Length: 378
Image (cartoon, rainbow, N blue to C red; front, side, top):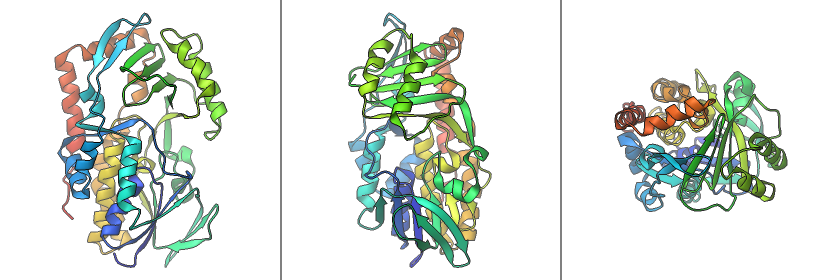
């Protein structure tokens, strides 16, 4: 792949993971990221099974991921008076190894910043493909032409919109929203439900984590004040520690709110543009996003390497090989699990974790999803 120029949009997990492999294979890689700096924080993410472990080992980062892991934490589900109802084991929420998203992003950035060009605080505004490459314009820097463009910019992918069409054609709202907020509530991990809404505090996932059912809302995803108002409205009148948490929301400087949605793409590539990670097969809070991103980066880069940079062959092989593995992203709705609409639904969810046989069946199912790919050795 020597002399192949690749633009990757997105510097969270999928983008730098792909950059690591492409740089090893000799490509010239540029990563552009809308955020002005590498984004820290975010909820904890996890890996599980032989496939994830093999890819992390081949990347050379498994030991560092283990050194910076959270250790996994059980989460106690409580009623409105704080009395324990059940425990969600750390092995269910944290996989084999759990790490804060910001720490994983930092590991990948440190491994790639000397071999790849990073451009922060900028975004792609247009893509024009020709026989010789893709002409790219940006919000701030001068236009450039690349051999290939990769959209690794999340479930609301800008590259996907430019190359494949409007977001509503590919992203399906699943009836819930979630929010992450730093509200100064460290300590043990607790989770509380009322019909259609959940709040959790403590543990590595986030200081405060909210999930609530709602019709689809219209708001500016980049306006924190609008996000705060939506969250306050959704939880008004709630029990347990909800009033205490809501009182901290107006002064919060680190709050993120978004839909729980699913991406459905039949083909991950169009011409010289290809999608990776959540932009191609995201399912918010589905539990497999980070693993899919890292394995997907390995497969996409490996197929480009194997095809000698021939994107037509490589993108077809990537889609054919990875689509069955990513099928898990089209299943399940974390919103219904985390914030059931009825008290009966909450009771049934809690009951599942009190019965070893049912919990064991769920763990076996997630193990199968994480390992069902014949991983090539490129």
